[in-house]
Image (cartoon, rainbow, N blue to C red; front, side):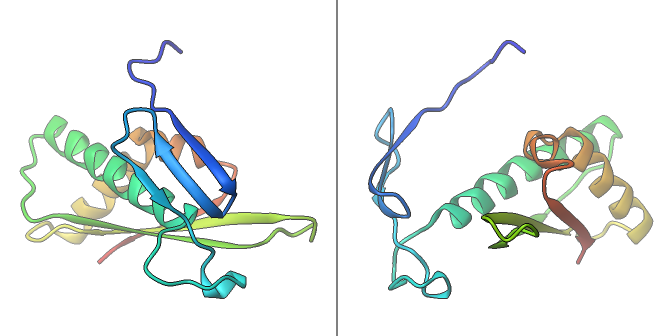
Length: 140
């Protein structure tokens, strides 16, 4: 694959309780381990939130693209991605899971489901995670 764009970010400090900065400085903030994982939590982000935000934005673009290709006009749409983390089945590390929920006002359920499944085939995040983590799809 020839990349059309490459993002670059550097993590420093103490990993999940460290700091991240993108090469262009647009992202530049501290990370804190969530309370659920034994950290202090608080008004800071963490890798799962960043992954969920990226996946949601990317999936939304994929959904708009497949709808446009089918000449379906979408308005007031929203994508929510929940990213979970927990122990892997081997008990030797951790793994992620994801749930994607689409809100497609004015679109019948069958069309919404077809668009959701088509977007899941197009989205780069879905393609990267396919076969690696459980991803559940739902229409709101």
